[in-house]
Image 1 (tube, one colour):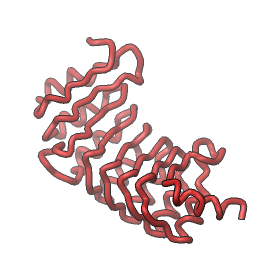
Image 2 (image 1 turned 180 degrees about the vertical axis):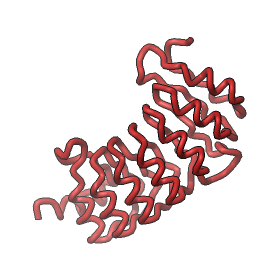
Image 3 (image 1 turned 45 degrees about the vertical axis):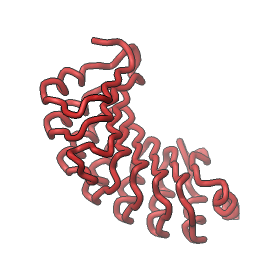
Length: 200
């Protein structure tokens, strides 16, 4: 019943009943967050309950899901239904199936812990309508760049250390929110390369 941001980052476990109760927290505004960054595991039932939380949901611990680096498909399916922004920054790997499921998420998706992204996963995530944060990626294949260029929300790729000409050309076509241009973030040293293909 607390009407504000709720941070319970010290919790390492969460019962299904507690998850059901916490799913009803929304604070004064739907932008308020529920932070559970210390969780080491999350049952499918708890994930299903938390997906109903109406604010921002933060599950950023690298120990989330019992130390797994991947997101189980059942948990991905439940969490994709969450209507607020979804922070899954502890994930270091994402299966193509989980990416396809998360592409149905209607809020901003934070996946900054990922260090690699398959072409198929990039194609799926490009369907997201809101912001996509992938600042943990240091490189991007030409095919992945082409796929992500179709994404229409804010796109954060500020961790890139290199970018081929074809990839830069693809990213230069990213339209950003509502197709009005911009909305993409890359390191300053690569921005000029991307910009060189605009209006070319």
